[in-house]
Amino acid sequence: MLPGFDALQEIFATLQRNKLRGALTALSVAWGMLMLVVLLGAGRGLQKGAAYEFRDVALNSLWLYPGKTSRAFGGRGPGRIVKLMNDDYAALARNFPSIDHIAARFYMFGEFTVSYGAKHAAFDIRGANPGHQFLEQTIVTHGRYLNDADLAEHRKVCVIGSKVVAFLFGQRNPLGEYLNIRGLSYRVVGVFEDVGGEAELKKIYVPVTTAQLLYGQPGRVHQIMFTVGSTNLSDSKILAAQVLRFMAERKGVSPDDRQALRVQNNIEQFELINGVFVWIAAFVWVVGVGTLLAGIVGVSNIMLVSVKERTREIGIRKALGATRFSMVALIVGEAVIVTSVAGYAGLLAGIGVVELAARYVTDVPYMRQPDVDLPVVLTAAAVLVASGALAGFFPALHAARISPMEALRV
Image 1: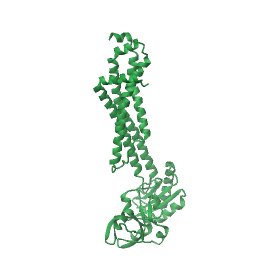
Image 2 (image 1 turned 60 degrees about the horizontal axis):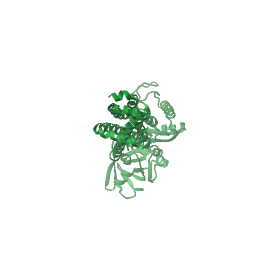
Image 3 (image 1 turned 30 degrees about the vertical axis):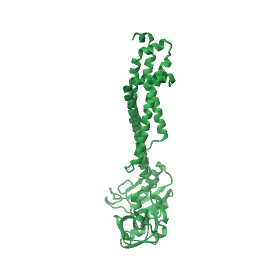
């Protein structure tokens, strides 16, 4: 319903006669479009930021934690400390074939002073087993990861992060060198990278059995982590419930006592976060489109004013044979042009703001690389054109209903 060249000239002449009114109305439309694009870009950035928080762990993983009983069970009172052991880890691997990878972790609490030659610093040290590499998505860049022989023989070996290498060794190859950790020497057998960030790259992993002996807690683990072959939420919930029942029976605790044993389901957490962002996206569209509609209402108002001011002109046109359709096309076309030009300017400005934010806002928690993709741009453009047509429709309908005789009396 866009007008031809002659009609375009007439529309621009009309806008020239009301520069201030037209500029303010166009500004409101541009601002509405800018806000819509910025909000959509921010929503995308938040969604990426939330997904980024799961980057260094297997998404299809479940983590089993022990705690302290909160209720009496099996003739024993509450307050009993529940401990996970190496044989629990083995029992899970043996009894649940749906588990792909499984790992046990032993926390050596506190930062340990680690030295090499004249250099020393404090690093986080953890006891782990071979499966831990898959659970933490650790990428070995030099040497190897921990293996079963390291655990069976309680070897004093370690795998170190690239930040540890940079501080203690510089450009020197660390493989085969020995680190002093609290007076004991550990041979470096591997170097790893981790997408989890700088904190992950400052970690040192040693065989879980070695860590247990050093702390005088042979066989104990603080956490058991495992992955399932499916990322289906219902499958993971079923497995989590089965594991809790199985471990509750082994430990003699109530299967409903979540303070004694609990499972952190990363699939469920990720689904919950995604569900939240579905609502955030809907809220963003409501707020953004609402802001845009406020500008569209302004366009509709000035079109009504324009029709009122041009009542005599419209009457003459109709007396000379102008059809209702031509009058509707003229008014709607004028509204579409105003909203399209102003909205396009707001769209470009919004994209510019989002791109600047993506370049300079890099350290904000849960905000990562906000952007505006092509479907969003096309959707916004469609909303814009539809809004422009809607803004002009009712004033155009009013113009089409003007009687030539009444108009000429004005």
